[in-house]
Length: 481
Image 1 (cartoon, helix red, strand yellow):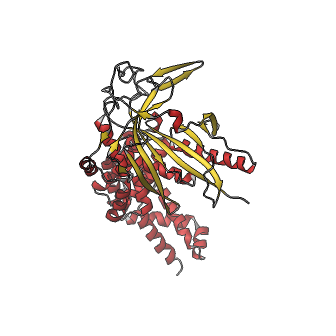
Image 2: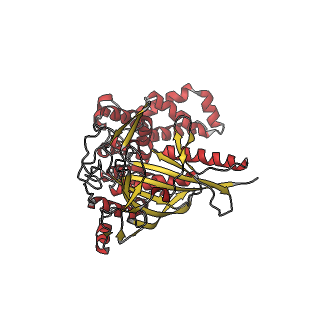
Image 3: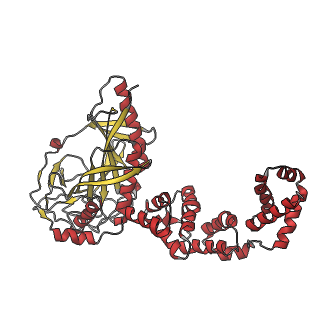
């Protein structure tokens, strides 16, 4: 049976977190909440006689990304006019880069199923974003607040061979952009958008077959779903002996299907030519090194530090550094005095469960790192046991924002460690369950945990489980004599 493999490359559009637009002084605002067409000027609405001026901060942000992606920062940069006609592009062309981009020839390593795969970066170039169209029946409304916002387009080589590699690359790239502080990563607001170029070939061959491009994927989940569907669609066409048509596809979130939109453009369709109003930009080596010196600790370096400094497993470290805010939260818990492995277990366990249940990021968790450390300290001090902390106190903290100590005192949740009191409960449980006692004495010593559970139930989970376990084992073993 013929095996097939996908050949996938990505185009990533990341809005840059500058205060003003790419070629004018208009402020950058949240295009999902600002009143339409309120932050526009003569330049970003393409009025006659206006001239663009390059945003220096956007250039530096682009350089930071290029360096983080192991790219060469090119000394000569040139802006071009990329001609195409849509209502949300007032000029009838976009100022972009093509032959002389800001950064090129880089790479990013991703790890999938224990194997490291190197994904080539063709280029990272600067351009301006378009406006936003809202379609209402037979009408379209145009908001130009976003027109002219600095945009960095990152183009990969067609090096990905599975959907898992696509997801790993997307997540790692997003983490890098957020860590650099050049993009806040909120894909729901369109500040980070993916486009996947996909073709399929027989496994073991090196041909590049006809590809399709899936446009404007605004979440990593959509990127994964759309890529998986398109791969399966193309494989079915190949198996049926039908051609794959080169075209631009959309993705329908409701049906999970890719939908043809238009025939795929080629570079010559855009009629690139040098932007006459912007002279070539010369980037000195000194400027590059100045920017390199300002780079923060990147996710890979932070992961290795977590492994060496905190003795975390590579898996836990990778999970924590996948999101900068999560890594910061973990380090906040450690800084508050919690042993690192314990802190990692709480963050990736109870805190992640809350985030998943509520559909929120760690920035929205109402328990601060210091407050979580206070809860863990009560467990370490023996004031409450782990189950009470996790199942009773933490949910109360998350709901009310109150400190752990106040909740424990108010609700009378302090752990019972009094051996005399616990011994009496052990005697009661043993006396009330003769059949289970006989089974235990008959060799089923795994029942000890069941007995511990009965004592915990008697104390509403407040008994010290280690003391209970020791007392039960002592009592049951004495019954063998």
